[in-house]
Image 1 (cartoon, rainbow, N blue to C red):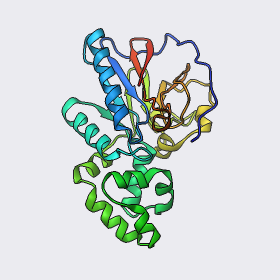
Image 2: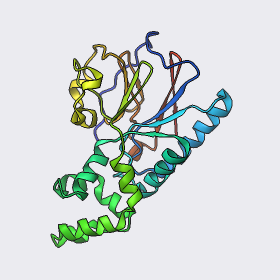
Image 3: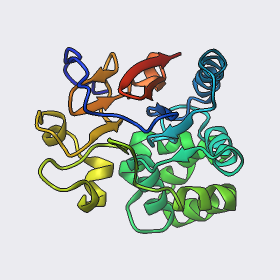
Image 4: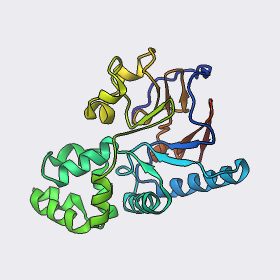
Length: 249
């Protein structure tokens, strides 16, 4: 697993705000760890009780792969989006899953990056099909096993969301390109050119995708991917007025 080099959190500038009476809980990469998701949601509920108000729960993508409970993660998020107004954004792993199941991408990259575990959570043993080189049969088995409402949830995920001065997406943005003109591939996949940038982006970018040991709170971006599936630490940025703090498992 790749962890980005550590960066000391910078002082939070006062120019970035969410609207008054808005609190955002932005949650990093879950990657099939439904156990950690439940723990973090409980901590968010405790925080809401202490702070008052509801707050907007927002997920930054990468719900599937690597961990063992992708199916249950998707079930929980789909219900939360439909019943509680959660905002769920698309990650590159959801994009890979949809591309493979749609026949638009070879199986190897997805299976090597957690797709085996995702399919197993739906009761499909991918290794048996791969050993027999039966990829079309594997696709048919996967489509039969994944519930239609899970596929619909994944297909309808947005790539980004803006609240006040904050821009939320999975991987990051391409520096120098206006936020409303970003390439979808960059929002899902970008890494070094964004991570290494220190310039303002026209909004503070909140993202995951690049795992770090501790959440990064920097002047131009906030990274809350703390590699939950390996570290047992699922993190959440709590943004209110001009302040940012962190909750984690």
